[in-house]
Image 1 (tube, rainbow, N blue to C red):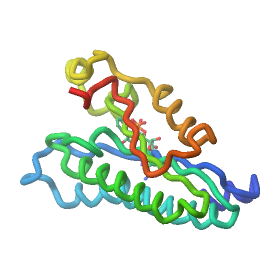
Image 2 (tube, rainbow, N blue to C red):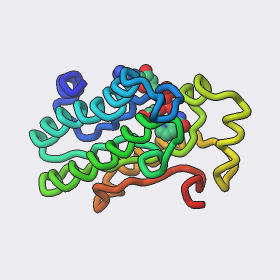
Image 3 (tube, helix red, strand yellow):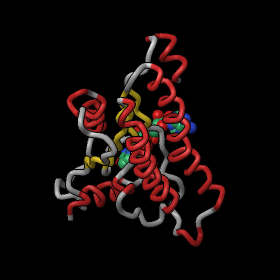
Length: 178
Ligand SMILES: NC(=O)c1ccc[n+]([C@@H]2O[C@H](COP(=O)([O-])OP(=O)(O)OC[C@H]3O[C@@H](n4cnc5c(N)ncnc54)[C@H](O)[C@@H]3O)[C@@H](O)[C@H]2O)c1
């Protein structure tokens, strides 16, 4: 991905590492080790691999901004999704490390923590009743939209957030506020 971006634009200024999966729903004592490995490989190692090569290129071009997509479950538990919770807490920690290591190299790194957002990930894994129930747990009593998360990513990618690095910003309709 980095090679393609650089061959087309000559440099890499912004990157958003978004790919992720929920994994099966089981309590920790029943969770299949293979499923654990798959979720960690995509949600945490995938973000590391991407940052690893994005940082190398951003150093070459003298700066940049990375936004990693975590989740509210980078901060609070998702019962029956232990690998998801662990992977997203890991993304928040990795983001802080990168921010500390690269601040003087003009590279910022921040994480976004979406609450429940109306995407295929939710529709494929939840019934309408369950989606209504998680929406009702947030004071705004609705699911978020992909646009509302993207707007935060744009802000963190832009110079408008030039003093913000190592942060973890939540967009969750108030879900984790209560
Ligand atoms: N939808 C939510 O409620 C919600 C809440 C919090 C965080 N998130 C996070 O937001 C991110 C995007 O989730 P979404 O809801 O849009 O999910 P989604 O399932 O709709 O989209 C996930 C995307 O990741 C891609 N992907 C999956 N495996 C991949 C791989 N191995 N390599 C490259 N791409 C791969 C898929 O092709 C897909 O485009 C994920 O990291 C997810 O954990 C989602």
